[in-house]
Length: 195
Image 1 (cartoon, helix red, strand yellow):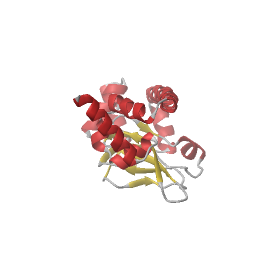
Image 2 (cartoon, rainbow, N blue to C red; image 1 turned 135 degrees about the vertical axis):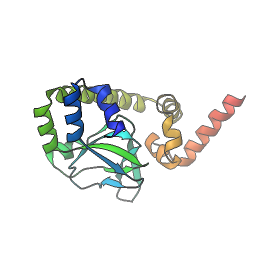
Image 3 (tube, rainbow, N blue to C red; image 1 turned 180 degrees about the vertical axis):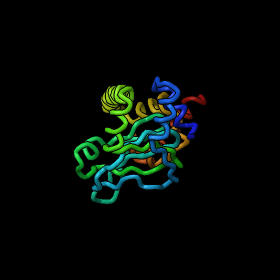
Image 4 (cartoon, rainbow, N blue to C red; image 1 turned 90 degrees about the horizontal axis):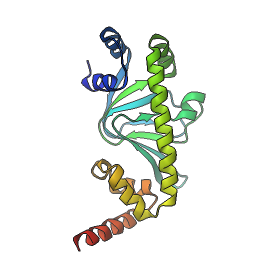
């Protein structure tokens, strides 16, 4: 029995003990090592994920080979490249494990089966998707209204764990700036703090 999965289920779903055990047996938990590609841009997404531990990076590769980081997913965050997954069309994004990860893995077929057996799971999934959608909208709007320095400050307040978990060049890409600009911002803020 995966303790991370048990903790996640206990926190999010109210089931009888027997149902809880059955659900844990029905769910697929997979471990992946750092650097594992979960999906390449242009492939069709066959799976959705929930991060039980670790960090997954979502990015797009431009024609010139540059990678633009779009998102980082960490503990208890769902990863669904919705258009590709739901409509079975090529993905605009790639997913890679930035750390060793433990993921709850689902597919369209397994979802339907689980939802029919555990209607409570559909409600939990819907609540998680609604919360995630609202949060992403708010974050996107805020991101567009902030300067690069304000974006970095916001990141340090809201997701400080990423500062130690993710390479600086990927953080810079995520913030929409060059690594040198991120270094200057960090230095400027550090100097201001030390004065």
